[in-house]
Structure formats: C-alpha cells, structure tokens
Image (cartoon, rainbow over all chains, first blue to last red):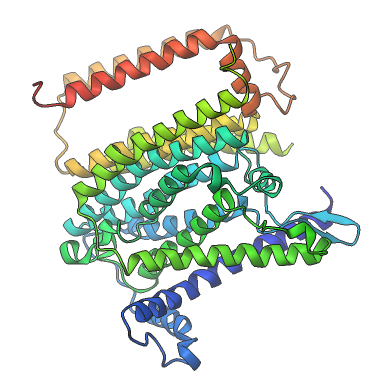
Length: 346
Length: 166
C-alpha cells in the first residue's frame, strides 16, 4: 500500500470518527427538541440561538461533575464498563459506505474505511460484544438495581440478536454477499432492498430498537422501577459515556438501516441528473445523511409516542413473534430464490 | 514479518489469559479472561486467512455463550466469599486429572510434524464462498446430519426445561 493511501485512510477514519461524535452530540439536542415539539413545548432554547450550544453546555457539565466511584464497587471493572460501551459503539462505523467513489488526482478512493467481505458478520460480532459494557458496569456497581438492569440488558440483547441475525440471513440470501459495499452497489442497479424484504426490514427495525436499548424497549434503564438501571451508580463523564454510546449506536444503526434496506447513498434517477464523479459522490453522501437523519428522527418519534413494554411482553415479542416471523421470511425468500433459479420446473 | 509478531503477541495473550481463567478467584474475572482468550484465538484464525471462522468464533463464543455464562454467574451472585471450600482430597484428585489430561495432549503432540501448510499462502482458503461450497458440496450429508443433531438437542433442552410435561 502506498503511503498516500495510508494518509487518506487516516483522514477518512478521523473524519468518520468526528462525524459520528458530532452527530451523536447533536442527537441529544435533537432528542430534546423533538420531545419538546411532540409534547407542545419549546425544548432547550437558552444556550445560544435556538439553544444550539446546549450539547456543549451538557458536555461541560458532564466533564466538570465530581468523579465518584462507590466504595463497595469493583474498581477496575467499574471503569472498564463505560469504556467498553464507548469502544464498541465507535467500532461499527468502519464498514459503512458513506458515499460513492471520489477521484483525487488520478486515484479513485472509496468513501468507506474498509470493505471487508464479512462486513455484516463483523457488525454482528461487534454488536454481540457490545452488551459487555452494560453487563460489566451493572455488575461492578454492586447495587441490586444496577445488577437487575444489567441482567435485563443482557437477556434482551441476546434474545433480539437472534431475530436480527435471522432477518439479515434473508437479506444475505437475496443479495448473495456479506459485504456492505456490495449490497449498496446492488441497490444502485435494482430497487432498494426494502421492496423485496418488507418483513425483514420490519423485524430488523424492531430488533435495532431493542439492541440500542431505546424506547419502547429501554427496560434496562426504566427509571420508575430500577432508579437508573445499569448506570445508577455512575456519575460524571462515565455516565456521559453510557448515554453517549446509546446515541452513537442510534446513529450507526440508522446508517445501517439506510444502507441495508434503503439503498444507502443511492437515490432514484441519480445517473440521469448529468452529475459526474466527485459532484455526484457529494450529493450521494448528502442524500445518505438525510436518510440517516430521518431514521434518527424516527427513533425519537417512537420514543415520545409509544409507552414502555413490560419485560415479559418484551420477551414474548422477541421469542414468540419475531423469531418465527423471521424464519417464515427466510423460508419465503428461499422459495422465491428457488423459483427464480428454476428449481420447481419439473 | 508482521504476521510473525502478531502470532507471538496473540499466543502470549491467549496463554496468559487462559492461565488467569484458572487462577482468578472471582468467577466473573475468570469468565472475562475466557472472553479475552476467545478473542486471541479469533485473531489466530484471522492470521490463517479464516475470516469467517474468526467472525463466527467471536459472535458465537464471545458474543452469545459467554454472555449467558456471565448472566448465570451474576444471577447466582457467585463471588469469592461464598465459594464453598473444597477438601484436600478433591484438590489432589483434580490436580491428578488435569495432569493426566496434559499428558495426553503432550503425547498427542509429540509425534506431530510442524510443517507449513501447503495452501497457507492461498488468500481465498477461508473465505465464505469457499466454505459454503465445501459444506454444501463435498460434506453435504454430514452437514445435514449435524443440523438434525442440533435440532434434536434443542428440542431436548426445551423439553427438559419445561416444568410440567402436560
């Protein structure tokens, strides 16, 4: 690999990292504004025009609060918990294609950090490891409420990972690849995958809500029964890391939904606009972020609309509804693929 | 060159954390070190060009099985204070059993020839297309039989966990 390409990769990694953090930061602001809008009130409007500096003020507050580690907690694991949550949240962005190819000088470079051919498996791996941050933090706090929150988080994420994986299998069967870049490229030629996989998309969306611990599945931190759930004992920026990781996960899963089911950076009639090369790529990136922002808004919309589930309802939905539906979806996908390949022509 | 350094690093991590699994007093720590061991093993699979195996290793072992292990340990709230004291007799028996197992491993590995794999340099050896073709082509019947085996194990587990049979 040439040094210039390494430099380019480093720039891309830094850019993706910065964009992820900034979007997550302003998602907290957007969440409160959306909540305000839905509940017919203003939301934050004191720090700067329209309260635009509110996330900075929040961050400053988080950093300057007293750092407190409970005496009876497991000190190392107590620090490891939020660090792991943040680490796994930041790791998922590397396989997402953020836009088409751009040309710098005489080199064509992808707007994707790495297009590994097991991209989806990598994502599933990182997601499945992501639960440790919450589990370790909840256990190390040495508090009954934290422990209950951690247990809820782990059982919920394990349960919904199965349906999530099964929904993805139908998509992989259809596209025939595990690489995210290739899946997005295929949607340039054909229609968006949601047209072929509406049920799979629905299952994936519901599971994404559960995996990110967002309402209506935010039982690990349901405040009216568990105080703060797994982060009850946390203060200062360690609490900030947990909350922030949730927003990063939300951003990444929105990006995933957009690229897996809604064409990624592709948009209709993109090749008949007369745009070429870098201009087209820039428009594509813009469109991609618009899709992502819509799904982030959708997350918030649902949070401020639906009440929280009960834990047994959550488990029943996961095991008795979503998993059979996902298997049914896989079955139908298999039959359609078989029919297309002429397996039923006797 | 870099592969070799990575190999030694991963081997060190794997062996060191495997030892800590055994020597940690707290079951939670043992489980966490086991996860580190799994990650080091997955890294070894990557070095052998077996990407799919590495990813599945992380998803299944580190991501699912160990979560359930830790879940149970947390649920029972096991820690070093409530760990029952084992008798000396049991400790001696355990040491002998472990030593015998080690002996079997050493005996098995004694005659092994450390030759380089002929297809080691083939970068597509562990890719998922290749694996799928082999599993659903050459080894179709054993693969399907093992699937039936898993299904029956699953049905058995569900049956055993049901309290009332009616």
